[in-house]
Length: 169
Image (cartoon, rainbow, N blue to C red; front, side, top):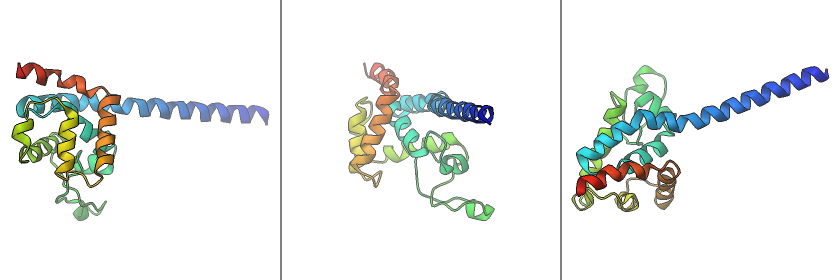
């Protein structure tokens, strides 16, 4: 009886540690996959990669949300999808053909903002987030800004913006 309890405790401990390791791999895996997309878009548009990735990581749960998995929507952008026709899941969020298409649509939305030309090429992610907040990108307001800022700082995404600073010189 005591041996069975010890074995069960050991199994629970191994399972729990495996889940922790898995949870720690998710950000690194997400970054490995989408960092090149974000940095390429930064070079094309002058929007910091830290902003692009920070918003995507938050909005998609680092690629684990249903919208990211089923719709390839990493930014919580509202629009049409075909999920109801497939009978699996209802969502008001836009479906994309590829994950990269979701990223491209996000930067196009930013490029349409009145303030974009003045911000283009700036690596000040806090200013970008402030402008996105003022233009009502997220309904969560300042809470959203704090959460994206936390993502950028925790994963040192601002280091990706160094290429943007070099391009301005």
